[in-house]
Length: 140
Image (cartoon, rainbow, N blue to C red; front, top):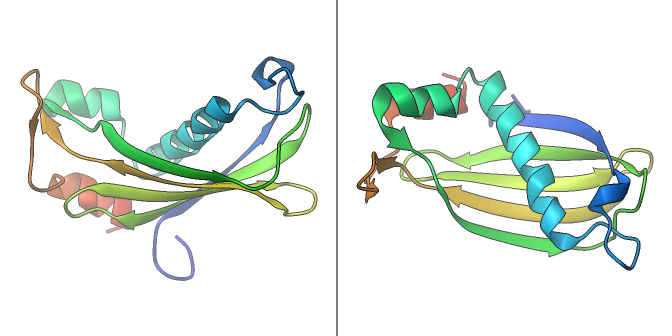
């Protein structure tokens, strides 16, 4: 948990060669992969396995919106830290992400994602996120 009481998680990664584009910087689509690695770590730390939760409850949590801003390029072998912070969990799961170079702390990218709860194969959107997921993500 952070000083503001919101659950947060950090992962440290290194840029592999296969994530680069022709300009020798990380291709923009790979940032979503980095954000997802941090999201998965956050959920694991909260004790949530989304696959098992889906099998048991029938709920899925698709991402319905992402918004990213790229401010400084990641390059081959850069060590970086991706931080994710829980912003909201009541009606949707809103997460804020930051990617910073590990050595200097220079900001490389920010992102916000939104996930909703849908029920089963019919993909019927629910009004609220299930309470047990809310509690876990809020650290209760």
